[in-house]
Length: 312
Image (cartoon, rainbow, N blue to C red):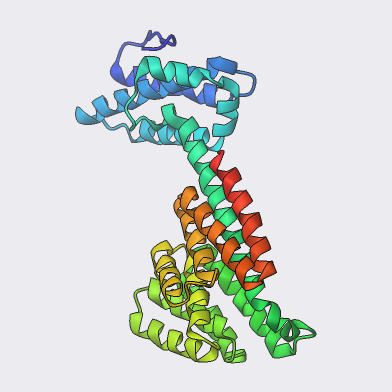
């Protein structure tokens, strides 16, 4: 066991649990300036967890104590960065001494925060990749957004609301917004793509196919449709479906950088940064060969961002 031993002066198992919870509540509420003393909280959580398990096994009603225990855990998660800032490298040293099981998650807060930062960076970079690609694809239609007519403005408001609802994973509500937008501007293929992808994620495959067929008919080429659908799948977090469209684009148009760009975005979402860098390098080469200076520039910038992400 580590250097923090919490002596017990109470007499019954229930009293020992309540004593640990009392101290843990005070400790979690006073992390600022605690320094390495904050490690006491982890030992108190250990004591409370073990005591609660033993009491529950013996049939004791510990619902009140369990609620207190869960509240302390929520508070620690909320203030986890403050906790880690206070204890620094002492956590790794104490963990090595205690050798806790993975179920005692509080001993692995540093690893959890690192994974959380990586996920946030990946999500941010994937969003940048997708938005950059959409801007590159949409520049030719720029004149559509100069003083747009009222119906287009209304459709834009509904599609923006739909995208926000997708972020919250409120898919039925998002679908309703995209359906309203498509009714206003039925010649916009992106609105039909959104409907198709949402139907697909909801398991409504027949409806998805109808929406995809409508979108495909509005795109100039099938490759444009596949790229658009892949990017939309990526935005809802369906990496497998996005990757399938990327692979189809690569097979059908191996000399275009767009399929590799989409596949690189999927690789970033999966945390496979080496694969993403390799694909973005290929995008640069293909874009340079094809004279697409915009795509080449974007790929170079995104590759630099992925390389930075590898350092975390």
